[in-house]
Image (cartoon, rainbow, N blue to C red; front, side, top):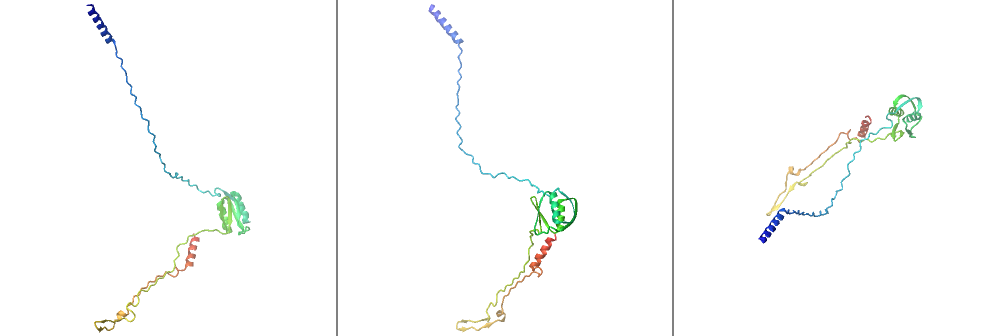
Amino acid sequence: MDKILRLLIIYLLGFAVSCGYVAEKTEKTVEIKKEPEKENNYRVIKKNQPPPLIIKPAVEKISPLENRFFTFSADNAPLKTVLYAVAKDAGLNIAISPDINPEIPVTANFNNTPVKTALEIITDLAGVYYEIKGNVIYIKATKTKVFHLPYVHSKSKYKADLGGDVLGSSGTTGGYSGGTTGTAVTSPSVANLKGDFSLKYENPNDINEYYKQLEDSLKKILSV
């Protein structure tokens, strides 16, 4: 009886302990190792590209005579004196060619006139030309210009003879066949057979004069 009671107590204690036991949950962490990225051994080859096109802005070339005015009065004054006055008011230097007579008398009156206009009038009166390079006014006796002349006609002529006496000068034929001698036969129409070809082309005489064309072309250009 005592033995049974002990077994029962042991059983109850064991049951109570088992009911009060809470199994601990264990979390299993799985680590996924990330494979190291393979180095990209590819090289990017850049083609030599042309540099970007840089368009320069259009810059208007301003004459040093712009916005400058000239006031001067001359009565039979030497050309050099008038030109010196123009250069002084324009703030420029001046150089006169030795081919020019600097004592040419000039009579003119300018009152607040644009320097460019005054200089053109003075050079026209004196029969000279001017050119501006940098800050210097060059006075010259002549002026060089390049003109393109139109096509100059030339005289052309062509002639050709073709053929001649096709059958020979005699125009006779003969032969021997089967013991029989052939007789000569002459045909006037055949004997005089001849081919002739002629082509002739000419321009009018006034067009064919080279120097006259050249002179006329220059007159037209200079009159513009």
